[in-house]
Every structure is written in C-alpha cells, then in structure tokens.
Image (tube, rainbow, N blue to C red; front, side):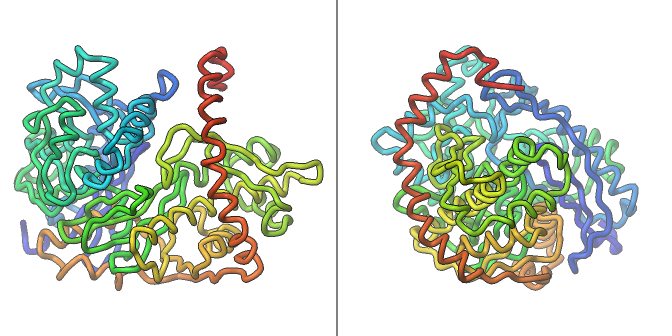
Length: 512
C-alpha cells in the first residue's frame, strides 16, 4: 500500500444490485458505481439469483470506482452483504444451486415446525436468528427433506459473500455477523451450534471458516486483480451483514441510539455491547463486531405497501414520487376513521417471524374513502415498526434516540406518522450510502485508518428532526394494542387461507 492510499471501498452486495463506494477517512464520498442483476422467482415462494451475475457486478462496480480514483489511492476493500443467503458448492467451490435469498419462503413449513417444537425459542436465543424461512437453517432443512440427493452431494454450504470472497481472495470464510444470521452459530460462544447443525444435517467442515468482521485477507486472486485494476496485494476486510453495517453507516453505534430504515421493506435496530434476545423471541441479534451487536427486527412491508396501494387505489398517479399519493393520505385524520390495515402483503418478519400472515383491512365501512385506505396503509407500516420497538424494549433495551434514513423518510407525512407511532422524536440523518459507508468505516478501523468505529456518530450530521404530533400520538397509543392483538386473533384464519390457496388454480394465487 502506497503512502497516498487513503480511500477505502465499501462494497455492498445487495438484493438487486452491488454498489461500490470509495470513502475518505472523514466520511467524504469520492466515487461510486453500481451494477444490477435480477431476482428470479421461478416458482411460488422462490427468490433466487445467479451467483456469477453477482460476482460480475462486484468486480465491475469495483473496477469503475478504481478507474475513477486511481488504484494507487485505494487502501483496501471492505464488504457488506445482504443477509441470510445460501448456496451449495461442490469440492472445487463451484455452485450447485442458485443463491437462495432472504426473500425465499419455500421453507415456511420447516420454519413453522422448528418454531413450534420444544426448544425452538431456546434455539432462537442461542443463535440470535428467528426461526423464519429467511434463515439458512430452515432452508438447509428444506433441502434435506425435499432435495436429499443434492443435500448429500454438497461439499460446502455458504452465503453469497463467502463465495464472492473465494473468487476474489481464494479463501472460504464467513464473518461472525453473517454467521449470526444463519441460525447455525451460537452467538454466546461464537462457534457453530451443535443442535442447529444436527437439524440442518451439515458438519462444521462443510461450512466456511468463522472469522472476525475486521479480519483481513491480504491478497486478491489474479482473476480479481485483473478484473478490478487493483494490485494483487490489495487488502480485503471481510466485513459484515448489511443490517448491522447500516447502523454503523448512519452513526447509530452508541447504546440507546436506534437506526430506522424505510425502503421497500423496513427495519429498526440498536447497537449493544452484549448479545441478547427478548423472552418472546420477537427480535434478532446479529454481530457487528465481537464486542458490538445489533438487536432489532426487520419487516417485509415498508414502501412496498404504499406502492401496492398506489397501483390499486390511485393508478392515475403512475409510478415514481409518492408525494401526490401521500397528499391524498393527509386528507384523512390520524386513525383513518377507525380503519386498521395489517400490511402483511409479503407475509411478515418481526416481531412474529412467520410467513403465514396476509394483509387485511379491519373496520372497513362505506364511510371510508380511498384517502382513509391509503393513510391506514401508511399507519400500518409505522404501527408494525412500533411493535418491533416494543420487542426491543422487552429485551431490556433502553431506546433514547431514533435515527432514520431511507427514501420514504424524505416525505413530511411519513416522518410525522413514524414519529407519532413510535411516540418518540425521530432524527433524520444527512444522506449517506448506508451499508456501503458502514463497510468502509469497518474497513478503516481494521486497517488502522481511524481510531474506532465510534467516530461514525460524529461523522453523520443530523439534517432534521420530527417530534410526535400530540393528537396523532394519542390516537396511535389507543390503536397499538388493537393492532398488536389482531395477529394472534387471525392466525387460524391465515392458516385456513393457506390451505385454501393450495387448492386454488395457481393463477388466482400468484397473479401477474
């Protein structure tokens, strides 16, 4: 590494694209590039990707940034990755399956069975990962039961970042952060969990080597060096999962400071010093570093709920900006005229962790207009995040500040409803590249370019704040217990609907 090398590339392997961003140690973004790829759904419940396409995107995005800033200025690369992915490899690390992503729900039956078994909650508490079809543990059990020959023939099982690192650095390793999201690692011992591996039918030798998130791989492969324009001796920091790194990237790394992100989906997470899970198992617990953990929950239905509402109730507005849609929602009063929406259009994760629930409007009358329905959808998303916040508090966490980011949070109504539903002031951080910046900061720490990751809290300025609307907050406090109890009351109906759906023509179950 030359004396001039002071930039770190945060390389974020996302669900629909890989983004490379070069950052200076003061947080300045110097260059960025992104390359996309498809998310394939060949059958109901499947959500898979081509690993070669993701590798190609990672190499191309890195090459674009290197070309923009010059290889001599790059101190290293640090990785972020979407969590919960899984693929089978042969003895030469060649993929035997597509990448099975977090959005793949084919293992819902296996997840429900594991969660209902004696010791299911204890398994969640040991591994930090909810028993949900997103998790690699139920996915491995699905392969074991549904495709036993493939399960038996796999030499290795890995996540997408693990495999990309094989191709870029020649080492099959998994960081503690992504390992804590597999359902296979004991978060208290930082080793593979014997019971989880027994359920999955895999041995430790079939899994990548466990390493710290700050672990440095000292070289690129010749293939990767040639493709990116970087020298072979470029140092690569293994990095972490995109969720914990999003906390770092928004500066929510100190106790009591929660990060809220709202995009297509949404999440609420807080950094802590020790791993923990609430008694009901409503939250996850994933590693950021060995002495910094992130507790919280992700929900499947964030901005995607508003997108569905727009197409259904306001098609004349077309795609794009939500401003006009939310102007309609603002015409309805808080509480949407006594209308509740369960926003489970894509099933749900936190805090129930089940693929079973479906969306529902409750309390609908002829007096309700589309304005009420649109606002109820917005309120449903924010009330679901409030359930996650309560689960975090049930885990013994004191939340004193919320920092929010994401495209949705630029809208004033989104901001007001979010702050009022959480019943807390919400601070909106100045735009950063989230997980990419978090990866770069972790890399800078590993490479000795910054004092510690705690500098993140000072690098991310607060752009604006929103306090709860007193009237709306009072309404949402009364709505919250009604909203919370609806899930339990409707579980038998959700179960019956799933059985009914299996009998219906596929065109009715999976419309275009």
